[in-house]
Amino acid sequence: MAWNPFRRRSDPEPAPRPASEHRPQASDDAVAARWRELAALLTPDAGLAEVVLLAHGSPADYLRLHVAEAENRGLEDDDVDPWFALIDWLVENELAHELDWKENAAELAWGLSRMSAVLSSGVDLQSVDDPDAHLTFGMLRANAILAAAGLELVVFDIDSDSFPVVLVETATRDRIVALAAELGHRVDVMTLERARHEGGRDYTGEIEL
Image 1 (tube, rainbow, N blue to C red):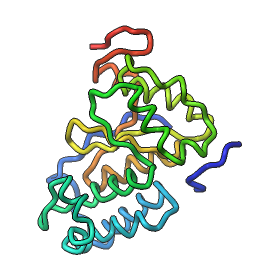
Image 2: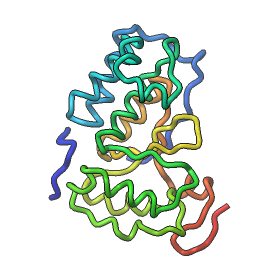
Image 3: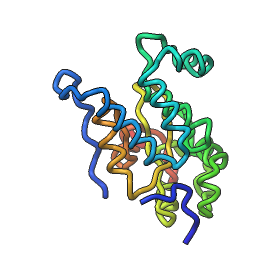
Image 4: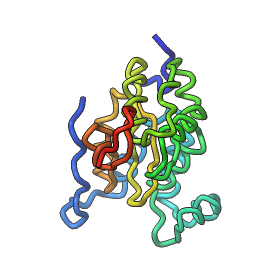
């Protein structure tokens, strides 16, 4: 079996993001524990938990130490969100790739080729590379191939036209989705319905609208 870069430890539609006014207020320790668990599910590297907990517990220090990332996201003292710190760390450490929603599957394939965990899985994703197919259909094809390694791509929603595509273990995906919801965010599992909703060409050349 291919080496699993996560070394740790199936398909409902993700629940809609809960409205903040209806979400029970958790203690700061409980929130920090959720961030810590989420980070641990995404990578065994303790560096992710460190940067996320810094953004959660000491926003000013996060801004001071991560000036470029904060400026890129437009973060300020009063609105530092650990979600962005988490995504930026994943991108920097080749466990995620951020794409514009209009990009094609060829751009996705290029991004995947730079993700060390994908390369280490031993799967062949050459068939994903198609400049005429939309990236969402590329994700579907990539996930069909990555399934053999127990991995899949999901989208960490940032309420913009950008798609942070993140590599996760399929076995922990549902818990990742649940933790994100508890923290006020959303992780989207790519489905055929979602790909069709986004629109664009599939691998047959047909346009989904």
